[in-house]
Length: 383
Image (cartoon, rainbow, N blue to C red; front, side, top):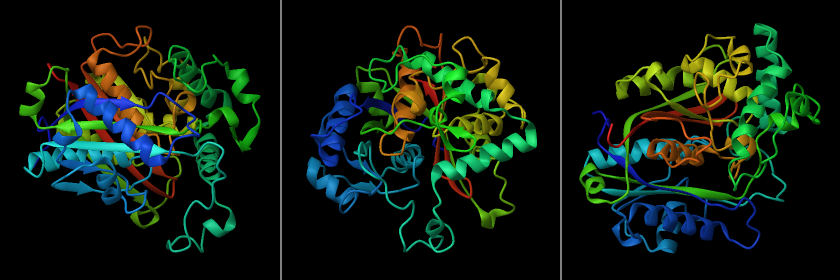
């Protein structure tokens, strides 16, 4: 069964705040849910499918009670930052199978000022082999960046070009955490976090979240707001059991071509891309794995201005996780929101992609040795 055209995104909302000391996590979920439903012209009473990562209390069950939902279908998939892109694909499949008609996906997070504990808990199989030795996400991606430099000659200045592009977009986003325009020199002169990644090579850390409403096509036709068609979806789990662990590649090498094939589109058809940007190296490797440039040429690709509005492929036009928003260390949901804005023609006038008809949103969960990648292909409702 294909999900191509079987469901639409009818509502999207990103919490405008990046620091919410007086909110509970469940309150953030609820505010985002109400925002997305209002955007679609629907209410809590209309929802019959609910999707959440299950990280709060009794997961999706707790949240259905808190928000007064009465769903006939619930999904608590957790794949890190790619979770919410997986939820959109799963919601589309559930709608296509007749399990629900109006699905709500929510994210809420509070991490500002909170000292983060171990990356994995003691009951995970990798804990005694990795986490106890001080493994961190920054350290893992630093290894990837250093290997990419060794294999392909990528430079710190080329990594910095990703941050510079994001900052050009973020200055037009009133809600972005970092709106200051930065230069390559600013990035490479910022404090070292994990060699070769500097502080400005790393994403921001924010409170907040967002929500997405996915509906059946017949529901979308009844609503006043323009909808976005879900054309393709694919997932891939990369881990050491799948063969030699190449630290210069991501799961997008598998998920992206599968999603594009389901959508029936090629790279040349894509007008805009929301690419997961936990670190600058994440963007470079993902662009290579999509095929926007050859493997090893990602550094030169971004340094030549490929990510700009008039470049080869505009990327993260809201400023992305590097400058705008990365709620709870999981930035996948807001990637979908910006893709919806672009396809609706509702991005900031200075960052709106002209005649945007096809967009991709890609999420990355985990590190390089153990990673969940999810790709979505979305199309304008009238396209």
